[in-house]
Image (cartoon, rainbow, N blue to C red):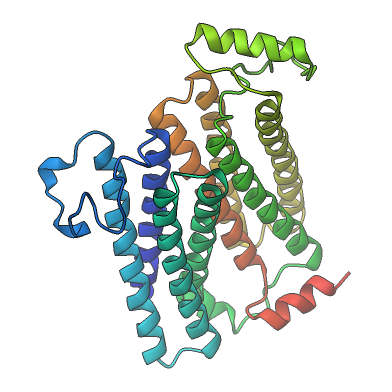
Length: 327
């Protein structure tokens, strides 16, 4: 069951990558019907007809169906096992969430990709990814071993890691909002913003941005789109500052905790890579693969943040809440 739960996590990350690829190629309506694909049962659609945007959208649907099936298998497996009741219920919730995610995906097609529905679909994907990580961690040998140890970090550390994880989750919501409102190049320069280091947020700035967009054969944007884009950049800076403080705390207190330090190392690496991908997304004018990797990198940063939280916290919800309440 342990390897299976890890495989489900990997399959979910692949699904997020494919979903990002669908958006990056604007292939969301390449298959206009759902749950069928041009009238065919999904798995019976001819492979030789998977061309253009169809190959991205249809592949996304196929992998989504497989992830749903894997989640159902794990859910049943858990309920037939002697695992704790909370873990069985978590598996059931994961299955219900993946079913809801599939329905939302279908509705985005039926209603022609409305922003609020597409955003909900994207955010729920990240939430489901966290649920699969929780399942995998709860089934892991590491978790089994830690239940018999008193190795929880102090409450201050746990609070800061929890806040950091929440900040990353909010950033993914902002990124989702930016993508689905076509605000990804609302500010097309870096490190300047609208031609200046400190954005003036006035009509002159908007005129400079839209002049640049006209020269690059892009539609003009509104000030609201500029605000969305700028908010995403500013929040990324806040996340970086929070991560630097977490590193400071870790090197002060937890050099003797290899699991925490190892996870923090990979988190640092992922955040640096994510920042570089974000900059590249602007400089390369939302090139398909760069943008897709940026979205996937966000999911990886969220996953590593959550794993750091799990490895820092006591094993058990009641113990976790009590630890948070300590001063």
